[in-house]
Length: 237
Image 1 (cartoon, rainbow, N blue to C red):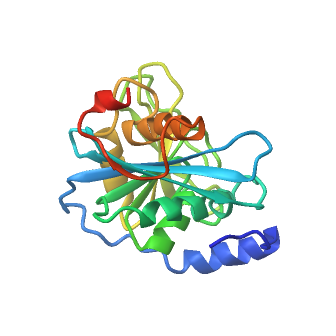
Image 2: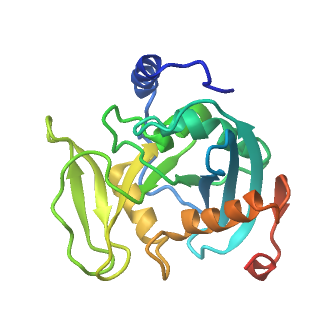
């Protein structure tokens, strides 16, 4: 799959169609034992996307395995359309994974998006799998700054309708928040609960932080494409 010939007006139409397929119906009490982090890396001015999906235990957050893949793209980097550029490579990594994780966290927005179709929602619709968006910067909506204390969170609202579409979550004392929203399958409440359980020592929660570390190793030629089990986290770090 690629979106190389898709124009931005066509991408908007596709996002509106994908939005009709969104579901947030998995019960909040559903047990989760594994969680994935997904990320992309690329060299400047390159059309080659390096993708990773790491799988961690939940809630212990121990790295269990990872899948690496590449894909070419001609779709430009345009704010609000990240899925069209990055999802094709992530789907290649996804295909290598036989035992799928319970939830996938993507480095970007989910429902917290002008058309409710951030990369986490885009990936979730195509895979029919529960996803969460965890973005490092705010794309859309308004909110009151949460307390400066770790784990503080405030809702993010849509400006016109006042719809609750995500959360600003403080992951460390006195640091900028990250932006959490369900992508597919999970409620707002469950998405925030899961991400609070994924906070470690860093601003970026562990699933996407570890994914970022590994995909850069892959881009730099230190890891090979395909699926790998990890017997010890010290194999990588």
